Image (cartoon, rainbow, N blue to C red; front, side, top):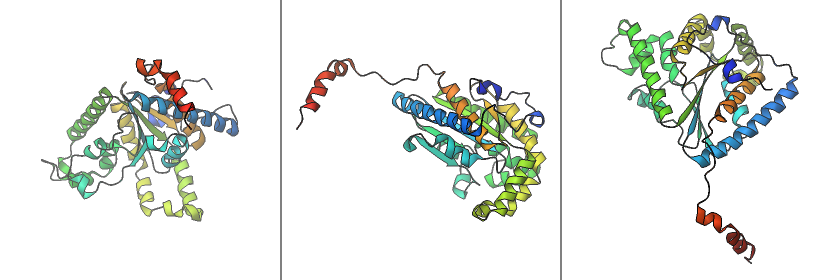
Length: 293
């Protein structure tokens, strides 16, 4: 499977979601794809060890997508071979009163991965130009100067927020964080089927909320704002990848392959060499250990 998926699925400022496929077909059996995904997981685990030892970069994986797009299961399947101590997952839900006492990017800043580690944002800082645009009354909870009603939330407000997010990403990449932004793209019909499955299978019913249907009624509006996000924040240092996600297995494979394809291009990431004095005495250290009783 030699196709360069990082180029194939990279979004641009001219991306049109309505004409972007939600299914990605591979000329292989499901079993073959599973084996390839397993290989990629093992390669990513090796890279994780090297990145940890190198201790100059960290990796931030951002996942966005409509409800039921498969974010949780993708995290489980793509990262399960990595050292659990080196992967930290943050799921950003409705801001708490404590979080609302800070600026909207604060909770994302403090969740950034430390050097040598992977961080996964399950829903991200882009919720601040997505959910809050569908429901602008949420902005009033931030208690911002000059914003006293929804009428104060103008186009200029959103443009400034996009600029702030782009600057946030520029700042962290210049300080050693490698950013991957994945939009898990599903069709409206696939979402309908997955929501229905939640209701029909008792073991999945806990995942369903009547609010899911209310948000589904805003499908077109979400798609409009997602497209604007992709167009306005797809940067060379922080690219967006649109992952066709109607099929969960191929979506997981695509994400894992893109992570691997990009990370191996960082030629400076390598395990540190031993100090000369230590290297020269390797045989002595082995002798000492072998002669222990």
